Length: 128
Image 1 (cartoon, rainbow, N blue to C red):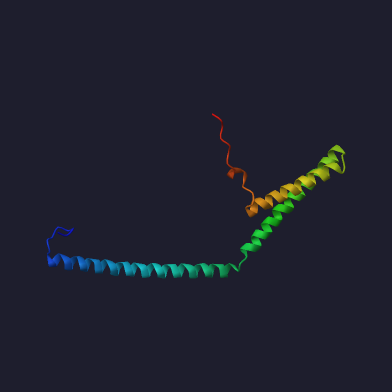
Image 2 (image 1 turned 90 degrees about the vertical axis):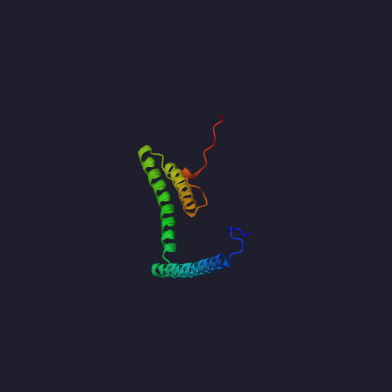
């Protein structure tokens, strides 16, 4: 006895074969549409890269350089101001210049992805 409940009816066998053939044709058509859509998406992605001229790398490099320079300049500026205010020249400038350099390096490492952002760090579990 077959799964569909007919005991050997030839008509249901032909109908099932027709349905399977129709499903196979629809599957083939869907596959070709998907292949076509995928090819168009790849072509569009290539066109987008060509249109931008590959300037993403230059923009990233400028961002990293400016983050490093700003860290050094802010440290030097604050050190100079502290030296002028407290009369401790050149120690405030030297100390905060070094701290600014370290902050600039940390910013570069964060931008490149070698160091996690502060909010991305895993918080330790409490003992409770």
